[in-house]
Length: 467
Image 1: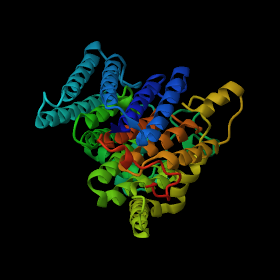
Image 2: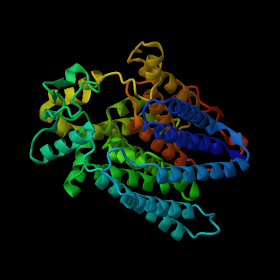
Image 3: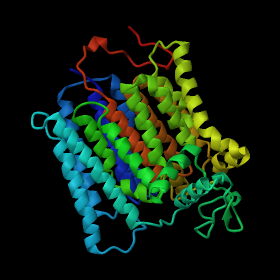
Image 4: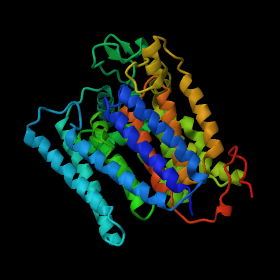
């Protein structure tokens, strides 16, 4: 018998596949198929979190490998037959065929690397993984060049912020134009006389990292593309063997991966923080506060996920362990955020904090709240997502394991539920959830254990397992 990681892996793997299909339907907007796929993903994710304490037959491991390998092949086929972005320059068929050829090369390298261990030496397998990552990077470069000026505010925010920062100006004091020419995407408090009252709605770390891409190549999206590739590398080499590589390919070949790059969304930077945190938890535990601190500093909503960090502590952790993890992580987040935040504190708080409350309720969001509003003509409370998150935390503290994989699985489920009950939820949000599913999947080892050695699920995080 094997520990129930096969059930958990299958659940999380199918969740990543299903959520990828939800984004494929309508580019992350609200459609009926997308809502169904989202529901399947959340159910599978909940199963994956709860199944870590179950005993299952060894044969389920083979089912897991077959299902997810077929899933990766399915995703590669979708990349071959769908334009990777929506703002691409007018393309000749031969130009898109170059992209398709790149996808074929990257997909072939990935599938060859998944050959049985008896067929392929570890050195050759690692080389194939590295070549796959390089191919994905060059495909991303092709997308960026084919879509040089995407009509989306995130691109304007980061391009102007990077230019301002390099000129010694505070990005949070800028007033870029409302490029849409209407108020459909903003609350009344966010636009005055056709110009935005916010210069950049993202935390300083996102601005710093995006600026690196601007310095290197004149386009902030190169930073986001590199973050995806680096996250894929950390996932692929999180554990030895094919399973971690398969998890990385679920992310790298998810059908809308290059759409996320084109749109300049910053979730790839947060995903890199997730991958770094899980990788450190597995291989470099002393570095967990550093990685976790960077993760907290990457997006505002990550602060809501701070209670989940307890899953990175052992059941009988001392107060020093708690202080080391939480104090260190919060300290790193403050150090990274403070220089730009203290430059003009009121501007920072408006851009990154209060302005978020005035974002409009989006009826096109991939959210159950948007579905409810369309069906009944009533707009649910903004607090619904926080209630759903609290209930998810209770479920997690009942079933999740204290381990790197337990943390990643719990984080993915919490983010997925929170977004699914929020007033705004699009492809970028769920792309982060897909990547976090893949981190959890890769972090789960499959090890033989005696049934009596398995601890029962804990009712709350401060309770130790029963003997």
